Length: 74
Image (cartoon, rainbow, N blue to C red; front, side):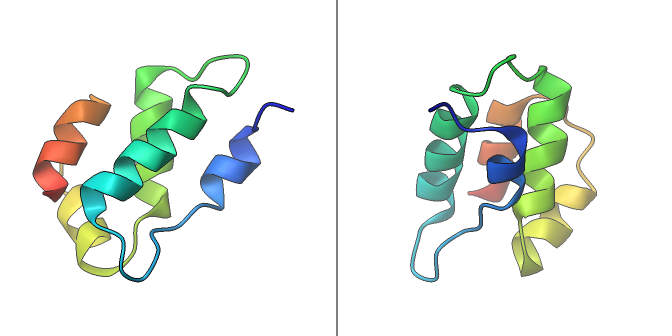
């Protein structure tokens, strides 16, 4: 069964998980959601799963491209 938007929204970075690894895991799951998410939806939804310093860093970002957010987070 394909994941849905709620599953994506409920994801979180694991305690010892690197940001880039989390972003890849999240994006791979997002690619399976049907209907597909728009790029802006990806960015908004991913940003809302972040916590602490990562969230603060991203919330000020004006990027609407998921790959750019990953670069900012690294």
